[in-house]
Amino acid sequence: MDFKKTVDGDSITFAVKGDLDMTTSPSFTKFATGETAGMRSITVDLAELDYISSAGLRSIMALMKSAPGADFKVINTSGIVREVFEISGFDRVLGD
Image (tube, rainbow, N blue to C red; front, side, top):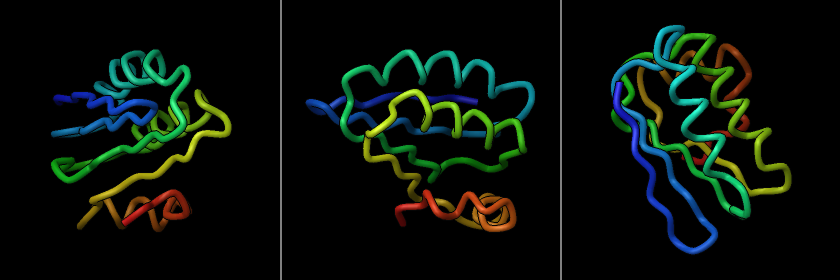
């Protein structure tokens, strides 16, 4: 798993690559939730995410909760990742 952030003023985008699962999600949660202070817009780009588990969904939820009031969206979901979002009801945060 690989992730990176891009900051533009008070907007931040996290790009996630690989698998976001029980093994990798704690690292993503620790990294991402520490970066949201003062951000008005948070985007999670999953264009290169191959797989997401319930632990990965929890990481995204933790990120969303880390910045109450911020505009939060998840973009570029496809395939099995999109299906997991739809089945779990998380598709309401999708921005694509």
